[in-house]
Amino acid sequence: MKKITLLLISVTLLLNTVAINSYWVSSISLFAPDAVNDELSTPIGEWDYIPPFDVTEPYEPGDTFVYDGEIWIVTETWFDPDEFLDEFGNVNQDYLYPYGPVQENTIYWRVYNTYYTGDIVIHNNYSWIARHEGANSQEPGTSGNGWDRMSNEYFVYNTYTTGEVVSYNGIYYESKHNGANSVTPGTNIYAWAPITTTFNPGTSYSNKAYVLYEGLPWKSLINNNIGNIPTLGSTYWIMALKY
Image 1 (tube, rainbow, N blue to C red):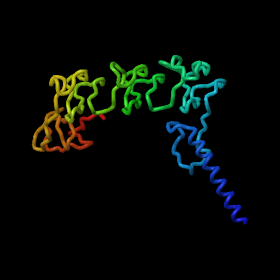
Image 2: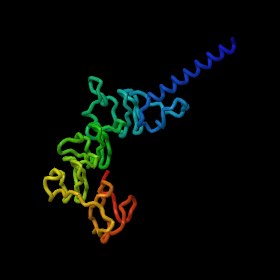
Image 3: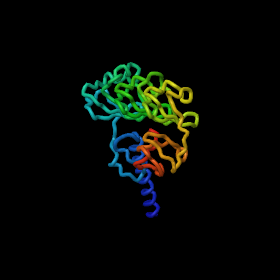
């Protein structure tokens, strides 16, 4: 009887431990600084507890809180908890936009987050990189926006510079001038030149010449480039794709 009682106590403690661990894990985002993994064997003390939003709390830069299932980080001393929510209990976008004192800790684009040149977000299943400060005001993928889609596929709203290579309808094209994004590849050879030359080890290639090798575009880095097989890390060739 003692053995059975001891077994029941052990099982109860195990279930309680799992429940407590699950609570801590489910209380923080995967993007939280201390969210290393979600294994149940992780000691409870290794997880930082992030409290819910409290309008009476005197928040300072670096403080974090949870609201509506999302983690927020205070970034400025002038953050006013009374202004964070509107009268309906929703995040007050007018207060946060465009350079608000608190940021939602997420990799997804939010109109009320503040972004700077080079920041990367996810939106509509694509990764996007900010062209300039304040790009949060423009939704990625819309006309005249401040974001470039991080893809080798041609995208009309991206900003392309001379020599960039894109893929369109299964063909690789080289941009012939800055701003070629306004012209669809294959419709104007002065904007985009198709890359159709297959690499031949017996041919001498000039500097910046483009070839196809194993189905991918490569750019020559030297003049009189002959007999050098395109490979990653080569001093003779560079992969001509941006992403």
